[in-house]
Image 1: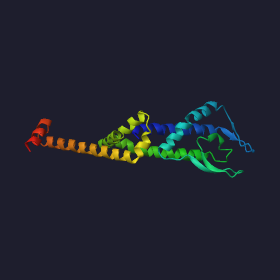
Image 2: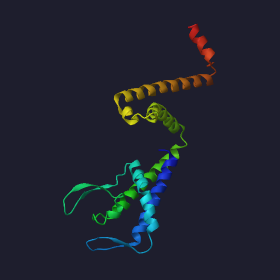
Image 3: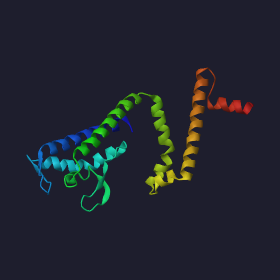
Length: 205
């Protein structure tokens, strides 16, 4: 993940948390068997925006490995399962899942993104960081081309053959990078490193 992507995702999670906080801070819960919430003011636009942002909020949490689901057992039927508290945000009261669970997960994701932004802010000035990204991009290029052609690129990349191809490409790129660095060092030391000079050296031998 690049610095700019992490910063953008952090802003999205913060904005989503603020919307959820605004909505639930301005509703009153009915403690009857229906367990419904009544808005204390017009929250239609807030609710609409929350619904629009739910998919992005879930993706942003998953992006940094933050789960958003809890184990749930239906009190009457005893059915067990996993409940995504963000996607099921409007039904949490009926399932007796506290809304604070949503804030807990969002706050954890925000904390992870804040740490990532700090790290990536420093790394963006490190040339080796960009060399590593370029290296990873290059060895993954064949699989992206296969994906663009309609093949199942992730499955091919994860297969034994895909791993062998990635290892071969990585080895070849490493050899080229090492040779380039060696030639650059020789050039700085005053040696002639042009193609003609190298050819004459090989031919002489």
